[in-house]
Amino acid sequence: MVTISDIKKFKPTFDFLVGIDSDGTVFDSMNIKHSLCFIDPLINIYKLNKVSYQSEQMWKEINLFSINRGINRFEALSIFFEKLKFLNLDAISNYDYPNLNFINHLKSLNIPLTDKNLKKLKYNIDENQYYDIKKAILWSDTVNKKVANLVKNVPLIPGASKTINYICKHADIIVVSNTPSAVLRYDWSNCNINNSVSLICGQETGSKIDILEAAIIEKYDKEKVLMIGDSPSDFYAAKKNDISFFPIIPGKEDSSWAFLESKVLSRFFSIEKNSKFEREKIIEFESAINAKLNY
Image 1: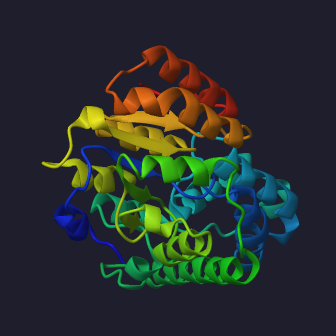
Image 2: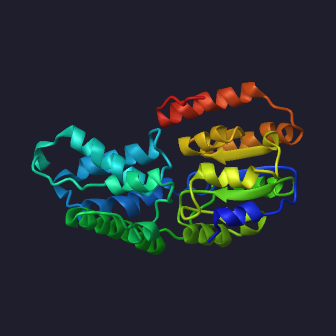
Image 3: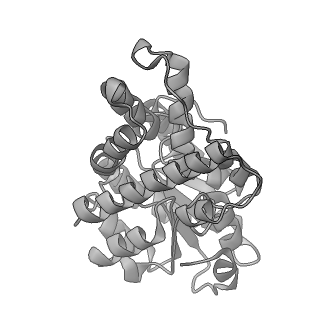
């Protein structure tokens, strides 16, 4: 597992750095993983059978078609139950909603939201809170097992591999993702693109903002750093670090990679910015995720 300390020690080969998200950006895996691996454990473990249809639709909306696309799974779990409670469905009028305050607690301490850190969680909690932590861990463990068993040989998005091979001849590349590191290493090596990247940074490493900050500081000029991703978390990680962002637009992934290769990268590597392209792509990105980004 790559740590923030490892990133800080990393020595550049090039003057340029490109951060790349994984699921939904390089791999056509977002729909597959959420449909096959996240929803059934959610319904079964949290006993949501009476509202299984609503639960499935809401989970997909949060994680695929909203400003929350691509966020950490535990944050998504918290948002899901907040929205479910707000709906006040008659079928679960007496439902005992889980207490997920521990998620915000870890976030406030800037501790990565991972299975391991939830298992190590030590602060004054009552028996019910401990039960809810155990249930969240069980859900996440079940998701991981389903991903390992069901999601194999995930296809690359057309154009991604070719463009990454071009980028790695001009820039250092790091993977910046909320996916567990073991899954990232498998996916990237299975498609023979792991040798194009310098570091693979997953859920356990830290937030995308912190990963990029550690990679950039005292090593790269910010005008020579680019983040590529398919979610608002990628956009905000780039903006927080004052670097450029290029969106892989949901539903238009292959054309996004083609546009990046043909229109954007040559300008980026020659330090020739084109804010018109960036604005147009962000507007298109906002439309795809049905959200307005602050920039």
